[in-house]
Image 1 (cartoon, rainbow over the protein chains, first blue to last red):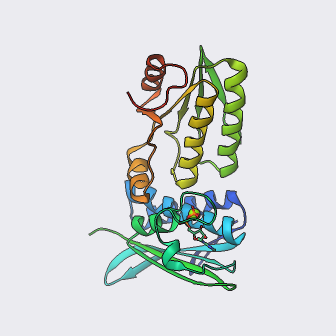
Image 2 (image 1 turned 30 degrees about the horizontal axis):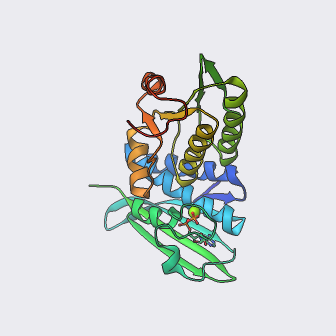
Length: 138
Length: 123
Ligand SMILES: Nc1ncnc2c1ncn2[C@@H]1O[C@H](COP(=O)(O)OP(=O)(O)O)[C@@H](O)[C@H]1O
Ligand SMILES: [Mg+2]
């Protein structure tokens, strides 16, 4: 079950139904922040991709969803964390079509296009952290 | 949660009702590929208008359904992709090239009526 706290909503990602929970929670939180229409679908789609990567490559991890405010702009931040195998070559993993899982290889580069900000940190044998932000248009 | 599959003449219709898990989609693929055989369907319509997102997994699986049913003699038409969903798909880098799409059930039925058995793609 997702846990709501002062620092946002934490969704444990351990199986494929958690992917749906994470993207639905992300959509609900984004709606509260003030996002509408296609932005909600965009945020939910990016979360779906990143959550699926956790299930596929790291087996388990968590996604934290939080409202953010910076320079009087409001938005949402999504942090996906796992202590799975990590990514040896991040630049390659960020390329369209690169996949070690024989899938489409669009999850990471696609999520970066969908969101306004995208950061990835990963260390082999330690894990992966993806941080994504979307800002409300003024 | 299984996706109900209705039969209308020679057409199988699967209406996705809710947010789908990966397993639901795989189940749909397996159900459709077997049902196309014993029902002698010439067309399959998958209505995705209730789907919250079409991510890379969903797109790949729907494309797989179209390929499998084509080999089994039926044409698949995906109908009801919502504008917001289509917009996100494009930014993600996804397309459904080679898979026939339509706005709604009527367009899906028309596309199947026009097409030959297993003829995928526009035109
Ligand atoms: N959380 C993760 N842990 C380990 N490796 C990952 C993770 N996320 C992505 N990767 C690696 O990056 C590659 C590209 O990911 P992505 O763009 O989502 O495409 P796909 O999932 O289709 O392979 C994956 O094939 C995998 O090797
Ligand atoms: Mg992926």
